[in-house]
Image 1 (cartoon, rainbow, N blue to C red):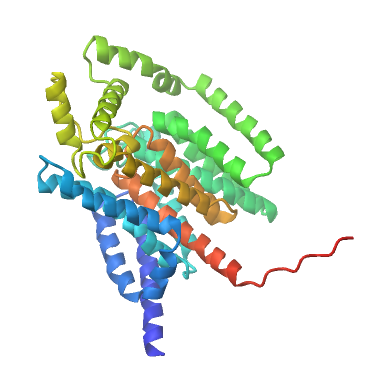
Image 2: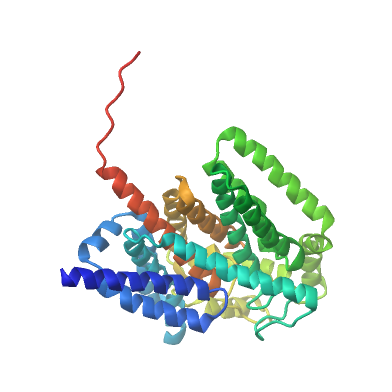
Length: 417
């Protein structure tokens, strides 16, 4: 009895460490890593083998483990790559092992909503400071940020955080309206609009501008009836059109893609869009060189160095091709890319049912997939850990719901009338 009581206490501590970790992610890399280590040290001794066996029987848990395992073995065939690069490459994949641990924890924890709320509160503080910067001209809090209206990190990270908060609040508004709590629904609506206005008009990123309408359409199509989906979808497209034509910043970010590519090619200017196209074409060429199992874990930079030598290019090699599929496929070939897609699919299917966990989980997965078309969001610090904790916590809730449903007796078929 005492052991069970102690285990429950340690599990509660692990829950609060998860809450604190998610709150720290928008603000501090160092603090977040400290809390992640503390969380794992507290959680792992409280788990039982049966819990792991049950969780690892689900594709949402064993597919990311398989991807990590392949990346571990992939260090063996990364020829010409130092072990520091191999281990750094493996560490990018290894964080996926956190997802099954969170499944184990939050299948039985009652504190999943506290994790979601802690992220919302933390990002709301970032939002407050951001708008304060806009109004007062205050400088960023850390030297890592140099952007207008971005107090910490960078504008891409901030927009991704704010988009998640906005779509989560939309579901919360729906719940409040269903309960006829009009005052709370109005307050949450205002907060959601403040997040979206910041994304659209203060520090817009191309990734964020693409993510907002697509993410909303995906969530509406999965979780709403057809008639409601069509109506809301039309409203989303109309709002996106209005925002585009009323924001010079949005127009500049979206319409500047073509000019950036031309400047990169014709005038040799370093531009974001131009470099991305160059990274992508080089990546495809590299994948064709080792299509099945890739060049090995941690080999991205060395592969780009070889490509530059073979093609006579003087451009600096990169370790970030700015596309998650290409980054994985360069290292692990089509095998790694297929495992990546299988992981995304298994996680998306986990959240196809309703509820706040289903809504949040699907939003996190969809945002990661969309953002990973233009960035390495599974390997970038903030977006990666948002994905791990978002999928892990919400997925634990969904797995608990499935387990409870499996224990219920099957309903008897009703007779025909």
